[in-house]
Image (cartoon, rainbow over all chains, first blue to last red; front, side):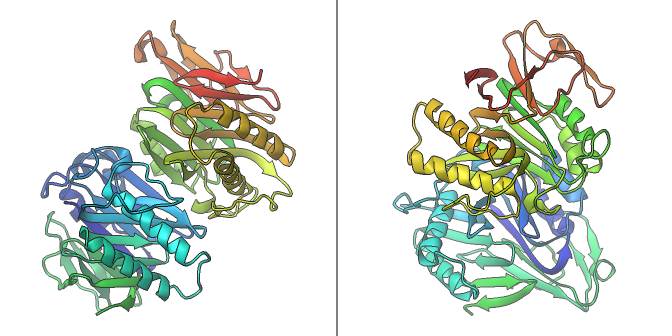
Length: 258
Length: 258
């Protein structure tokens, strides 16, 4: 399968610490060696670094690890290919425009009988079940909401109902963002943690790195991290249930079904 | 204004040499300090590195300069902002999907009275005249050709006719690619050169770097470089005329109006 990593924060925050842990799983402490990618939102823009090479030996991953790009919404993915070969066009995250916003998507899992999903105007570029499901979601969303509503809660409830349909086709763990919101949907493996004052120490599981968040943050910072598996071994992560979804906005949960 | 750089090659080729020259113009030998970007096609996929910082001091530009990503189609841009502030969402190249292919676009120039251009399904994310014109072009193309034709010549002739309309609104120098073709359209400043055997030495204008292409290539390589201004001072570059367009495919010109 693959691993997902997402962040939502109330101030521009770098994800170097969490990304350092994740990239070790791309061929070193984990088997996810078929590429990796990360999307940072900065204002209305976003930029994606992607590589079909294993993250543990990627020069681009090294840059992302060392260069603190500050963002309020991040989505990352390391890949163990099942549907679709090892190639850039099959490497997550995928990005498409809807309502004049960049939507970014990364999927962990595998679907069957997905070829009937109609994608309308959004045509997949690669061969993955994941990108096809993304195109289907955006197509359904833009059909249901031709214009972006001011209140995004109905949109995310609708997206969650689409995820329920995809979960019936297999394993569908999802991170999705439009830059303001980070939506997380769980089939079987997704955890999150919200860090806020008083901040403490955290120790990565996958690399011998410890951080004292107190030195890196101010008292009003709120940072949510979402990951397939916990990245630290001395903090309490919330394990999401099958069918559970959470919508994070500026580090806080603004909508959930639990 | 801005500067454009494009490449089309018959074998995967790195653009480190030309990019080294261009990035000096981003705040050092040139005034284009409001961001830069580069898109590399690799198979059906592409990846874009972008930064709203000046290219001459960007860590990401340094990586691109040092890390030879091999590609058969590249589009790059350094920006001197006129329409739209200095921000990631206003930084070229822009990419959108059409017919299940990534289309990448970079514009040099400035348009007036462009707000009437209807963009249909493609909604601009940032505030530039450039991105709006890109959305308009893709909208018109997908209206005229709902399905990708096997013969792309009529598509590029149609795109050239759209460029003629945009040229009536101001300065419109364009690089556009779908990964297979690199389309170049000139209003006032665009040059190209096709390098093939026998290869010789080239000397960058903007940095003290010389290269002997004979050592870097094989006899069957064909590489076309398109740039706002020549990047080398000991080679003959073709200066394009107002209204001239060229479509490059695998390093060779497959369509032009001259």
